[in-house]
Length: 358
Image (cartoon, rainbow, N blue to C red; front, top):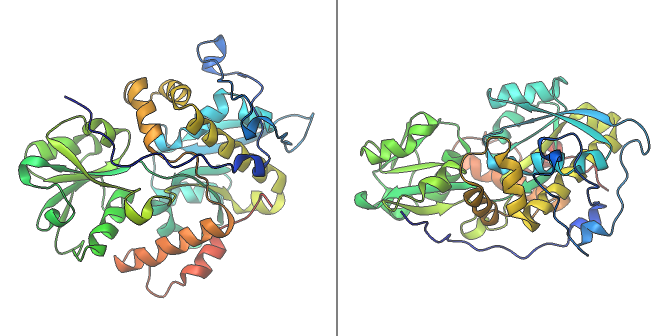
């Protein structure tokens, strides 16, 4: 089977890193790759190499941080890259990963109550629970891309319009992919609740459901969707960089509110470290793929690197741009009845976002 050509191209590399005070990692510290298996790539005169960063306690002990993430989601690749290449240590942080597999509400409650200090996740899964008022603050957009809608060629499911009357396999009814592609369908005049059926299957069986003819399309995220695209019986109908979403973030970083209020330098250091690591992912996806593979990433290193190239790990919305994107998602989610109609999108964005870098 051959790999289809990706439908979108890399956006130009943003020179945001230099303005954020990002620094080059000094080396590999206490990691599986410290035995010399994964050399840190040289970045020459890139902006992140020319600006010094201050940790929360220069010259002192590293600040322990618990970071919740999903090890099976390649959209969180910046986290292991930050750890393996020494970026966290460079910013004065000793980060412990908490691989969280529970519900989003449980994750946000864990952050709000201090069981974790921060988490990386999908905006379209987090915004509804954040509407409930968890004491959690979004501090940065991590990247865009990684969700895909695939259709069966034999069923004629090759465009959004062709999905009317079809069954779309999803992992759950609140999945970010269902929310996002429901938005795309609604913008095409297709009612995402009446004109298509979203049928739930175990995550690893979505492609099998299409193969058996029980569904004519599937919607989920990389690495699975990227690997399923290798099956020439499937075609990529859309992704979350399609059309006006080409620069929209999908993965965000959120911190517990008390950390933002009481330890702002620590909150800033964690945010800077992950943005620096995201820039490194964009600059050298081959290196990032090797790191992520060491954490059990699904797929070959070559496939993982190709996935990372197809995302926008160079684009980290902050400030007014990120608040505008959050508000846009909120207004859009109202149209598919995920967010309450009375919720003020601008006020919501102001409430959940915290600028820790200015």
